[in-house]
Image: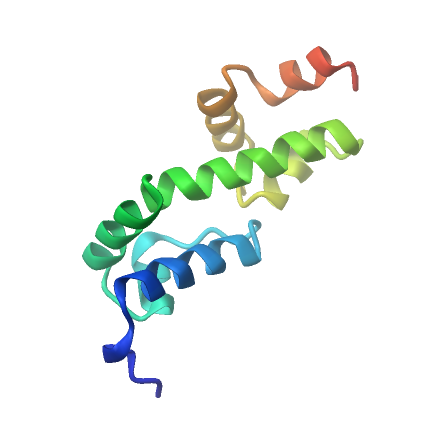
Length: 116
């Protein structure tokens, strides 16, 4: 078992960031991500915000929505498929998150850029 006692705050935040970016189709809760990063949820939330200026949740959602926008522009995948590719098993949750980040639904985004 790895000794995590030598990890710095920078190491913890960077490891969590790398874990998020490694596969955006996997949604890890903060406790699960903290465990993978070798710390506890409180420390992870604190050091991640200090290091990157946004919460773990905000960072994760922003990265997922950036990928979703790219997929909406460059593919003909269904909205459900794109939602699953960015870590949402429920289409309604994907649409709601997308709207919070972009101000429009995925379908409206696609129509606006002329893909549909």
